[in-house]
Image 1: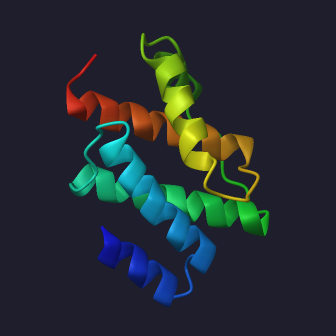
Image 2: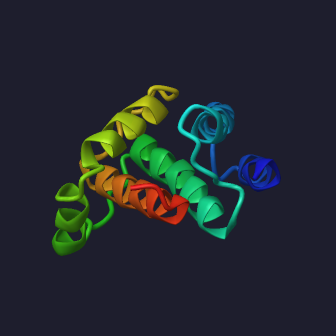
Length: 119
């Protein structure tokens, strides 16, 4: 995971502060929230979050998340918990996340939570 984030930073895909914050996100997910991220899905989620933060910093916008998929996550029994996790992760960054990005981050967290197998 660290190698992937290092490459993104060295390739100027993400800024240094995003790199440092993402390392903290990885540690927080694993240690505080007990959500494994050292797997293929985790790498995708971490990479997407880093890119989402950079897009928001640059003022770039993406399309909104599919409303049906987002509603499925919002109606899940763990949605409020996912919001809490998401807020704690975003606290590492001095970036205002674009609202469209937040839906993707929540769905990604939902996927990690589901893969964890604890409902």
